[in-house]
Image (tube, rainbow, N blue to C red; front, side, top):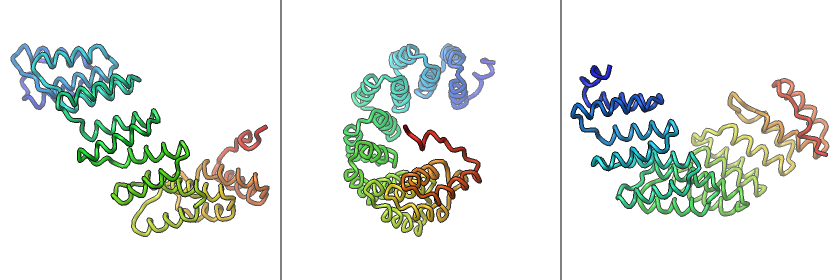
Length: 295
């Protein structure tokens, strides 16, 4: 089979190597690599990177770094994709310090991280609740002329909300809106900010205003605002929203009914309790009684 493969041009051989690595057949790819090398083929960074990706995919850490050394010893310089794959592999295996050392190694070798690499780093920082580092990295990206997508901003705002810094989150969101980098995830956090400050009506007004210019909310948007009305004990208005919102195929859901039912129970509103229980029965949703009666 390998002899037949060698008759294909370089592009096909690289594509085959990548395909084998993606199907967890790195050692088969390795055999092909050495056979091609023996026949006089000079491998490019794509071939080396494909194997590194395969080793990462199969969790072969020792092979990853041995192959990186082998690659460099053969005069092939890793590119940003090579490093990004290794950085993500280290993050996924809980090796934060080692991953960040690799980022520094990239910069020392003048292989500047690209937007994809920075997003990989930002996601890891978010999972570790390192808000100051996220903010600093976003500034670095701006200085380098890289425009982050909505995820890092949403991550930072979500983290600020998590530690109770609602005002800071709102201020950052307004900056995001002025730059035009917001999507539904960012707006959902904005609605959450408003609702946490007991400004559910303003959140609803903003939602309606955005929808007039083509904004498409999702169930999270609706649940956030409806829960805000419940938080402010505006149970009747929450019920109106339940029937007014244009829910997608999965809504209203358990989050929706839980918000209204828990508020109705606290207020002792038996009429709404009955309506919600009937609606839940109609939607074939099971009630977890232990959620409502905490001893």
